[in-house]
Length: 333
Image 1 (cartoon, one colour):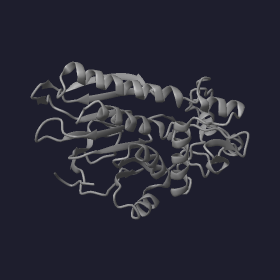
Image 2 (cartoon, rainbow, N blue to C red):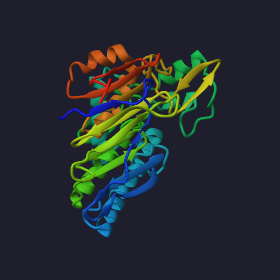
Image 3 (tube, helix red, strand yellow):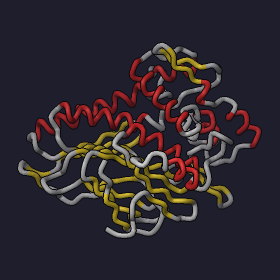
Image 4 (spheres, helix red, strand yellow):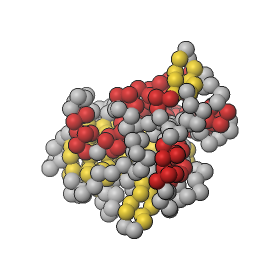
């Protein structure tokens, strides 16, 4: 994997990923763009007009349709989703696509020592960061946190013979920390199958690119400052790659000057401390999605030690004091 060139823009914390682009023209016209609200965020696909407007737009729409399809299936609040049936009625999950993603989620949990855990829904709900929450903006009692924490645990999820079950009737699955990355990867597959040779796919704090927007140019992505306007870094991707960012600015509330955010530490049931933002650069968007959460929970020191075992994974980590740690030189262009 070629390393992305990173240009420091603002010496501050990283935030949500978003696209930086000028008006780029190809032999057949301008970059084409489509957006759709799905998976609780705006998803956008941009692609050069190499196939002609009608074919390129049709390919983009088909890719967005695939993302929407995944959004419905992976929505654990929808009664039609196998996840909902599992969480509420203990119906085993047998859908091959869901089983495969759950298996991958559990593998990330195992690899990271459980700092990524797809069973955090009871805590998210308790803290007020879930669709059904009633406690948003309040700090729950220690007893309530302990009770919710007892209902979590990735080791309680069993995948065997193409079926997902649980050893605890109270444990629930929420794939929100990995599903968006999976959907982006599936959208990329659709675009390539339709003949698209270059595209940028954006969904929330995650971007995936392949190919080139025009001859001699690379896709450019920005990492924005969470506390102020502007960029922390600009990223140039010369080949197929992606970036996923998790931060304490996405969903949060402040009580007595303390920021309480949605990224829970599975070890204690409280928002993870010590980190402001983590960006993971990896060609596999599914793994990047889950890893950005896992590394955030680890905290900078443990995350960097963990990443030494995986030199192919690029990262930008910003601690709670705004200090930046990066796998690449971000002191200049």
